[in-house]
Image 1 (spheres, rainbow, N blue to C red):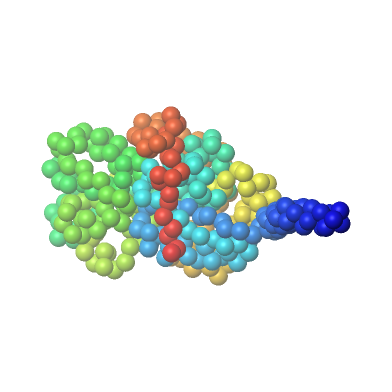
Image 2: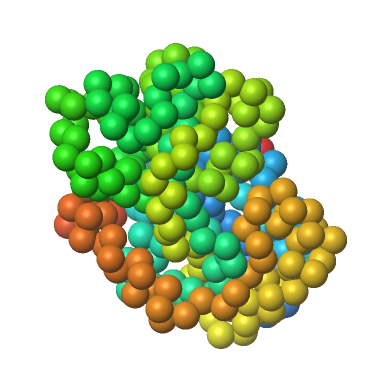
Length: 313
């Protein structure tokens, strides 16, 4: 009887201990996977274009990072620039590519600036080929298409129009669209008369857009290049591996395809000066940055309310 009770006790203890041992073994595997850089790497792209276009443009970068880092790399974007900023600050992205006006807030939150594109950005005005608009003075009374409110080009475009002493809603009529591409397509479709956009976005559009629109020879303002950052909590080793991979990317077959198609001109190392350049726009970003529903006083989104969509599914 005593022997039988002992066997039952051993069986019970074994049943309790086995899941613990199995959990410890799983934890060990997860630790080894993290040490070898395995697992999903979430690459967030600022939503300057449609989801399908973002995937097409960045697929060579995704494939390269997956190969070199030996990780599953997935591309994400967000509904608009405001959600992108919230998603980034809420930790949805491990690596992200963004315009400079978000850079200071992200660095202050713990992101590490790695590289920027070599070529700076330019502000362009684009109208239909049959339009009578030829110069800035012709914008009076026109419908101006802008990317969404928290994009760098919306902010700069409104500043430029204000500098021409044109008042929104009186001298011209701003129309907000989810992305640069959507603003350009609105002009093509006749829903707007002129679009404020980036030279790189214009270059990445297809013949179906270039065949109907033309750039206006005005306002070629130069803006800081786009930046690539990594979350600080990836650790020194993880960040160093990503930095080394990016440094070698322009010379790889995937990198040559990427930079030939985008006009970004390669990478240069990010500097403190790049962060300082972004701070010029930070007051306007904070002024126009609405607190997301369910967010805290810092404007951060409720993680369950604003999940970024996958671009590659």
